[in-house]
Length: 95
Image (cartoon, rainbow, N blue to C red; front, side, top):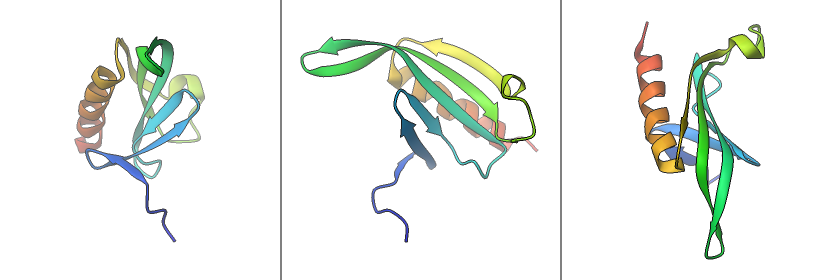
């Protein structure tokens, strides 16, 4: 039975573990890993101020270091998700 509260952004699933967000499906050839590197307090919330974005292969036979296809750093989670969405859509559209 699927969970009723699965998060999806622009048609791709989101999973979070601590300060790492995975965007995409492990069943696809590529996935995006977003790592929150720095945060600051805004009232009582932690807001990301530095986010690492990596487009990676999902193939488990490739060494972790060799899985990274593209990488970048952004100054907000919004900017990181925007880039991640474009990168993932373009990578999955390639044949």
